Length: 138
Image (cartoon, rainbow, N blue to C red):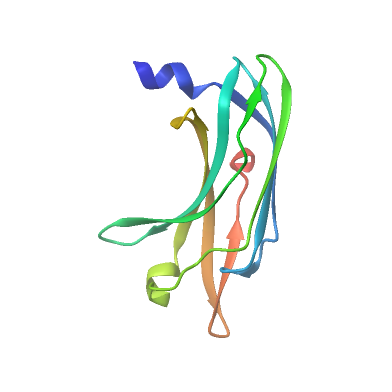
């Protein structure tokens, strides 16, 4: 049960994603506050968007944070901004359903934590509009 050991490396206490209710490809900023249960070194946050097509899932790379480290039992925060979700190469009907904004905390290149934010994509006046939900609101 190796995976279980890393599952609770952090406890999320606050999540904001802005803007929401806006075009799917628009820039976005994620801010999270969390408490660590152990020290995390060589920590890099990686942001991706997952398109859930009927037959397969595709990840769109967005951005990564500079490397940092977190002390055990600390109140920490992170902020990561992306210039947007590059959906070129996807047909609108592939995008117009639920996707996932995925924030992965890499520890020395290995996944320590994954925070998934459900993203509902709807079509409005021919434009794809995203609404991103905080995992704390489920």
